[in-house]
Length: 404
Image 1: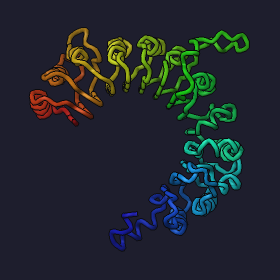
Image 2: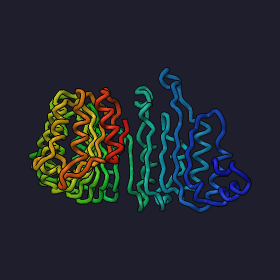
Image 3: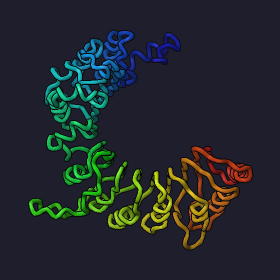
Image 4: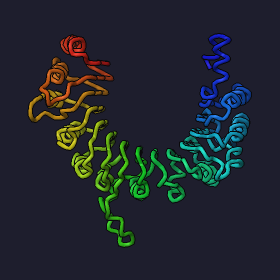
């Protein structure tokens, strides 16, 4: 706590302000004991709700087949944290190989009355030879306690738990979820997520979406052909190794404001996404697009030229773009695309000389029905002097914020 080191008075003020001590970051490296400092930190936080981040370093002994024992420092830290379990508001526990026995043995359902956010990971780095003898029982006990909080709204689980415990999760009360699973599992879960506001979905790379039809004709499930309406969802993040079209075709998102789509397969299509936006009648404000394939630009152009996406104010792009893309953005007339665009972020830019600056110039001297471009960000730019000089001049004369 740097504030306590400025002077004697600042130290007194800092130590007597509990809110300053309500967030705790712990790295259990084993090189030195953090337990006395943690005890003092908890004492100074008094009765404030606690936000806790805990991480163990990776243990490479397991890779060599050496039996792994519980980390004594981790156990001491957990024992101390559990004494304040009634004050936990947000927790992130990132264990190296397995969850702490102290956590498993002492957490009880009903003991976390303030908990709003929980993230627990313990098996991602565990070698298969060790996992095959492990059960999910320790995770069951911990998550049963975490799920029992009446205020839990945000959660992130590890893949193994999601794979086998979908029906143990209180989906209805959650507003933010971060999941790695198959598309089939996601479509089973979403009908139970009526209060969802933020969804981050990363497809497991061993679960292709191609085998999933837009609507499953399953006579044993009369609701399987119905679209899923998520009335409160405002932010959607999809990271897909295969086509996410079946997901797009099953959703209606009337409140969607932000979409972040990562295409990591060869043949993406634009229409399922455009149809989703049209069907939802939403007012999308932010669109982030990443594609690692030859059709990436074609799909992007097809999406942004749709009238359903004209409401976008921020566009972020990470794919190969030709001069034609910037030429389309430079067309400022009655058929202009993205008329409300105020911020453009590009991961890479390799245009011919004069192309980028022409686009920026056209977007800063526009008719009244076109919004002025105010922010331009470029991660990696193959610069040309003509573009650099013109953009600098436009930044000064038009008040554009440029970050390249």
